[in-house]
Image 1 (cartoon, helix red, strand yellow):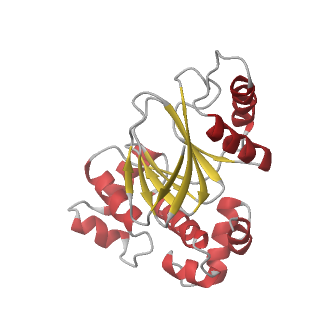
Image 2: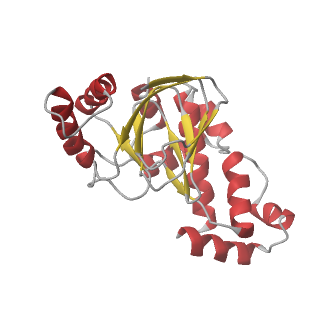
Image 3: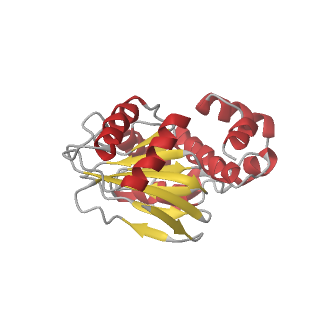
Length: 240
């Protein structure tokens, strides 16, 4: 199905045990589960397994192409959410599958053939580094959600920890134990994902750097290239 959503809209999971493939045809979205958060810019897709409940937030006006799959239809895809980079062939396959939906593996004809190719291509699709692990509970989760909602804030980690009544050293330990990432690196990834959102809006590199909390454009470009393997300007231009 094709779904047009307005900026600011929230969409709760209604898959009821079906796997979902959410492909952003236009716009930028955020997706959050209990375990992680993702930024989903134009041209990327998010695989949501049947066992996962997700909430989608429209950062901009959004056009989604959505496919639903039976629990055993795509066994090669991971058991957790994953952002997929879709090459042109896969983008066209998804568009065709949306036209043919619902896809029935047991029926002969175009639906069966498209599903077979789609399964193979999705299993081989590159996974994108657009995820942020979230602590499951407690002060560490409260801090993570504060940062996730406003990653470019100049408020120091010490101040944020103080507002939650936890010393930084304890918070560092909790965040690393629950996400596998040091708190400073975790905040840096949150800021870079915010920059991805802004670049998806066609913001300038300088504007994206400022909103993401970077005072130095050169430091921002270096961090962005290190994380994503390309420059912010190239990322923005390819997402148009």
